[in-house]
Length: 86
Image (cartoon, rainbow, N blue to C red):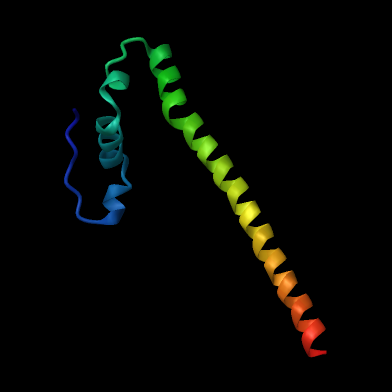
């Protein structure tokens, strides 16, 4: 575990001197304890970066479906309004 310096502002939390030990200390022990650097990078990529890319992809797909659904409802409302009030 690395020492995390005390910060007083949100700007201080963005400094590498603060963020680096926070990120390292939050890694699971099996990743931190890996002695082989190539395997360490591989585990890190599989654990965090591929999952976050998948989450981004899924959330983007959901956002598109939600947008299409909202537009369809808006179109239904416009058609209903035109047919009933004109």
